[in-house]
Structures are given as C-alpha cells and as structure tokens.
Amino acid sequence: MKRLVSLIIGLLAICGLLAYSSSQLERSSGSTGDKVLNLYNWGDYIDPNLLTKFQKETGYHVNVETFDSNEAMYTKINQGGTHYDLAVPSEYMVAKMKRAHLLQPLDKSRLTGWHNFDPQFLNQSFDRGNRYSMPYFWGTLGIIYNDKFVKASQVQHWQDLWSPKFRDQIMLIDSARDIMGMALVTQHQSMNTTDPQKLLAAEKKLNRLAPNVKAIVADEIKMYMAQDEAAIAVDWSGEAAEMLANNHHLHYVVPSEGSNLWFDNLVIPKTAQHYNAIYAFLNFMSKPANAAQNAAYIGYATPNAKAKALLPKSVRDDRQFYPTQATIDHLQVYRDLSPAKVELYNDRYLEFKMHH
Amino acid sequence: MKQKLAKVYLILVFIILYAPIIFLIVYSFSQGETMTNYHGFTWRHYQTLFSDSRMLAIVANTLLVALLSSLIATLIGTLGALSINRTTKRVTRESLLTLNNVLMVSPDVIIGASFLIFFTMLKIPLGFGSVLMSHIAFEIPIVVLMVLPRLREMSSSMLDAAQDLGATTRQLLSQVIIPFISPGIFAGFFMALTYSLDDFAVTFFVTGNGFSTLSVEIYSRARQGINLEINALSGVMFLFSLLLVGGYYWIQQASRKRKHRKREVAS
Image (cartoon, rainbow over all chains, first blue to last red; front, side, top):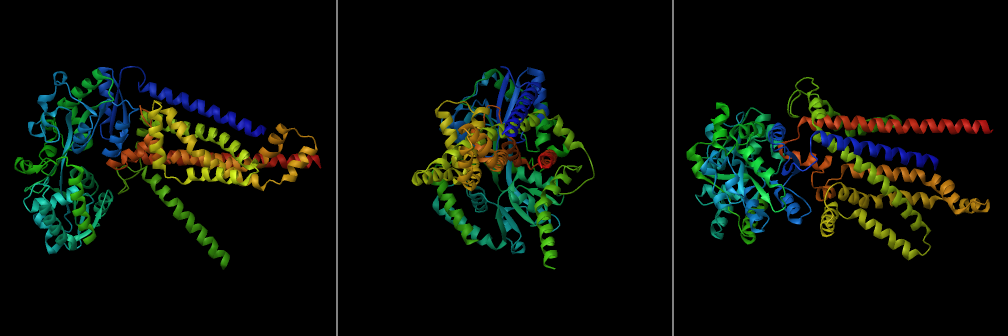
C-alpha cells in the first residue's frame, strides 16, 4: 500500500513536470495569448519556416492542427466545438461545405495579393468568382511510367494504356471518379457527365483495360512504383512528385487530350474568430516570395503566377507538373455531383472492379 | 533436439517482432529523406526533432494524457472491480460485467464519434480536457478486466482470517486486498497506458483548439509520406520505453532482495 501511494505521488509529479514543460514549449513557440491563428491543414502541407516568418512579420502565432482526409475535416468543422480560422479543403469539398453553409465569404477588399494569381486557376465551377476560396495548390491526374520498362513515346495518351503490350503491368489508383473520368476522356466525353449511357460505355471501355491492370490500390501505389513493382500507374500529380523523388526512373505525363484538374484551397470556416490574423495570413501566403518558398517545400504546383516566375527554371519548365498551356486548356475540374449521380459513378466503377 | 528447435523458434519470433522497429531506427540515422535507400550516418533528423518545439510539445502532451488518464482510470477501475466482485447477486454481477465488456469490444470510431457529439452537445470545448476524459472512459473497462481475475483468485478464508485477527475494513483493504491484487492493478495500469499512447480513432474526434497527440499528428503527416523525423522520434520513444522497462525490472529486483533480507533477519 505504501509503495502504491508513493508510486501514485511519483506519477503525479511526472505529470506536473510534463504539463509544465509542455506549457513552456508552447510559450516558447508563442501559442498563448490573443494574437493567434488556428489553421486546419493537411499534415506537413506548409513550410514550417514560413510560419516562423509570419509570426516575426505580423506577431500572429499560427496553431497548426492537421487532418488526413477531406471528410474527416468536414465532420470536425460541421460538429462544432472547434475554433478553426482557416481550413484547406479540396475543390469538391469547398462546394459541399458551401452548400452546408459552413463557409464565410472572403472579403476581397482586405486581400492584397489577389492579382498575383493566374486567372485561369480562379473562378472555377466549384466556387464561381472565388467568393469563398483562395487556391492553395493545384495538380492533375496522369500517368506515371518507369523508363526501365516503358519508352516515353509509348505512354503519352490515355488510349496507350489499352495497348496489349502492357499486359498485367498497370496499377490504378482506387478512386471511382478518377478512373471513370479517365475512361470518359478517352471517349471524348466530359469527366462530369451524368448520362447513364455514357457511363455504361465508359465501364465497357474499362473492362477492356482489365487484362492490363495488375492491381487497383490506394496509397500503397507510391511504394510499389518506387520499388519497380509495376511499369505504369495512374495517379495524381502530388503522389507522382513523391514517387519521382524516390525513384529517378519514374516519370509523369499529363495526357494532352485532357485530364482532371484539382485544387486545394484556403477557406474561412464558420468557426473562425481571428479575422485580422486570417487576412494577414492570406495576404502573406499570396506574396510571390512566400508562395514560391512554400511550393519549393511541398513540391506541388502553385496557382500563384508571380510565385511560379520565382521558382528555378528547372521547376517551372517541368512539363510534368506545370503542363503546357494547350494541355491545361483541356483539363477539367470535377463538378460536385448530387449523391444520386455519385452513386451512378460508383456503381459503374464497382462493376468494373468486379469484372477485373 | 526438441529444446533446440524451441529455442530457434523463440529467437525467430523475437527477430520478426523486433525487426521493423530496428529497421525504423536504423533509417533514422540515414542522410536521405525517405526510407527507400540508406545514405550514410547523420544526426540531422534528431537535430530537427529536438528543435521542433511543436513536436516536442505534442510528445509532452501525449505522455501527460497517457499517464494522467491511466492513473485515474486505474483508481476508478480498481474500485469498480472491487464492487463488482462484492456483488453477491449473480444477475447484477453478470450484467455489470457485460456492460463493461460491451465498451471493450465496441469500435473506437463509434466511441470517438459519440464522444464528439456528447462534448459538443454539452458545450465542453475540445482540447486537453476532452481528450483526457475520453481516454479515462475507454481505459476503465480494461483496468476492470485486468483486476477482476486477481480478486476472484483471492480466497475468502484469507479475508475471514484477517477479520478474525481484528482487522478493520480499512486495514482489510489496505493490508490484505490491495497488496494481493496489486499485480493486477499494475497490469491494468500499463495496459491502459499503452492503449492511451497509441489510440488514434477516439483521439482524432475529440482533439481540437491546438491540442493534438502523437498518433493524430503522425497519421496526418502520412499524406506526404512519413519523413525521417518521425523515425528519430520512434527511436527516442523506443529508448524511453526500454529505460522504463529496465527501471521497473530494477525496482522489482531491489524490492525482492529487500524482502529476502527481511526474511533472513526474521528467521
């Protein structure tokens, strides 16, 4: 008994020590007091040096909290009990949050960096006139190939994937919208079509791809490609950037006939409290030098035209991640479809997976 | 021959269990940025880890929540086990136990989601308090399950003997029952501790307002691929737990020796 009591006291002492040190650590990074900004972001999706720089310039400390999927973020914000000032949803989630009245409009008169953005990445279907969102990063859907097994000229277009040469060599990302979209593009259809006939035709098309498909996988696709497990993969540019960094035999192609264009965006959720900090941060992040530094750290494509100009030539002329204007013109942004239409996509995709 | 095979088997199992951890730690010293190739020795990842005050604050928070919650859960759980054991009516006891077990087997995601709804309904702000409370809540059933078997083993004649010798209820508890069930209490405490340390699902729902724990942070970073700072952190945590286990062993050895000596003096 005596031993137990002394153990309990010892543990409480350790707890006290931990509480003290955690509060010290938080103070040393300045997270107490009123001058704060609560940012709800994807994990490791901003250069930490920028946060220090922001605090030095404006005095606002940024508390970063992280999420791992759009849906998780939506749930947390929708449920309340949190005080996020800024969040970073993908484009379809912006539309969904807007419909659920979870967003506050941007006050354009307080934004100073708006002219830095490339107009072709503004005013998209998910948020006309950018009333609620400021683009953060953008990217595409494309083909990753391994030059040990495949020549560049063999995989420049979606249709090339159907070639009998690639039997059992292709990995697909497990995403209904993207894989169905790919099949629709090869048939010169919109990636947002809701015509059941066209979707059925796309499924038929995918079924013919089945002999070439080695696997339909999720995040592991990065690992498999880095380890030369498959010759070809269909995945997003953000993932591709990581694969390329791990294996220099890999290359990324955005088919010029069309593909998906996705965005991650900064938005102000209903839970926001620190408006001065929010606009200071949005203006800070849209400054070309800062946006360029962030893009260099993350490795995704920046929608900030002036920032792109500051990036090294090897990066901004990299056609893998900054495709030519002609290709960009063919890219399509996913429209937020009604649940019934999403179901339609999922059903056709599931049929294909079962067929596979 | 059979013994040798058994030994080989044992060694093999340990290798399989420890290899991933060793692998992780080895790469924390790699000069590269990812775990695909080893690029020569460096302390760099440890340096970034120890200069990342946000990460260190999260580590401190995680340990604090784990220790405090398992301490409180052990207290409540032990008391609960004592009272379940004392219930003489079989139906009541069984239904209490079943209610306890339902909490054990229900998925973390459900528990987490219901806590989130519960806290926001009561307007309790999400943060340290909400995480602590929910951890205590899901640890209590574990402690109860660890303590109860020890209580069942205890023979009632021992208690009768103590009472015959004039022990008050308080003495009975502190000098007979608690010492006897203390292995169960310790086991419950350590189980609760590990549950708290690696819980993701429940914690994810109830964190907020700048407060976060390790599992939530690491999981969110996975979108960009785990960087080697996490490896360095795993290395430090592994060393920490080794020290903890070593310390526990040392304390036990010391107390055993002390008891031994006492007995010798007595005889």
